[in-house]
Image (cartoon, rainbow, N blue to C red; front, side, top):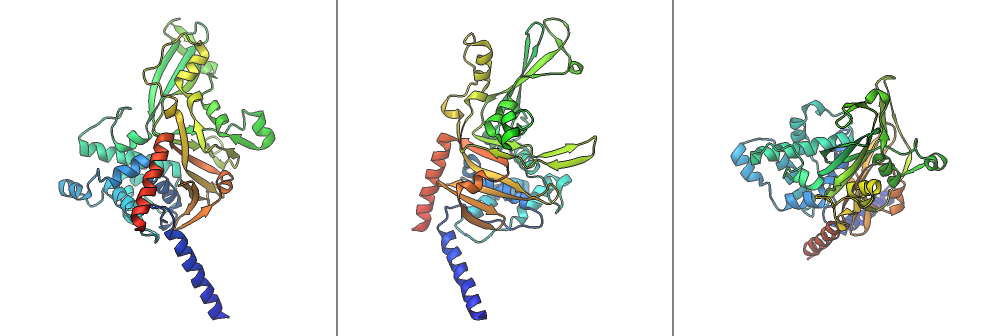
Length: 381
């Protein structure tokens, strides 16, 4: 009986090994180093973002040159480069990103611990670390939307904020760069969501770009009226990024009650996403008709169309939850659960409690999949 059990385990291991060898290049598990599922989930998504992946595979940040010039023992860019090389080396055994973790701790010392962290906070921290290190190498200090570091070239978009006087209609417009968009679940403001128990991504985006009347205690000085006036505020997207990251606000923290909770609301999200309705050009035209000219930084229809390539999901409680990543590669979904990777049906992905959604512009998505297929063919020869 014991021999039969041992033999069956060996057969399962052999079958799993054969299955993994057929997986597309780049699918490799990451060992959990102690409550680091938040890190592993974000890394899987980042390393499969086509611009970021191609940047490091093309050796734009040369590790040998970096060590020769700066002599740093731990460089975040070098460790990301090493991580990308390891993930796309063809080796299928789980990889331990210990050196990367130490380099990230060096950059974000306030987050250095083996305690569970927030995946979104980690994502922002890593992009900030890439930006800071690359600008140090380039001798650049640009912090605006024109930064040419790979983090901003891939993820940076531009938000437009219109604050309008409710008396005279005068509008003050400001622009702010962003690397992601944080969305409230539309449960409170949607009767449909209350009845069905689900939210939709389109509902969340409509809520994000909807004009909001500011309270009487938030009166602003109108340049036209020259007085404090009630105002309304509306956000829109002036420029879309190559890679669109949508962060779903599932964690609520009350400073008054000193409590925190997780919103388990189901979110329905599309695999193909058209962002045209949320562009500044679309929203301003809906307010003023065709009386305005084309926007200088207006996105074309093709660049507003996206395909999903990664979903980070959170399961469990706020204090003791777990993060996993679902990757869409070559028309197949894969679940990355720390060291374990397996194929899953798209229904599993749709039913997950998504926390972060990663989309890439459609043209770039198809090119990236084609490149991966070519690399896989070369590897199999």
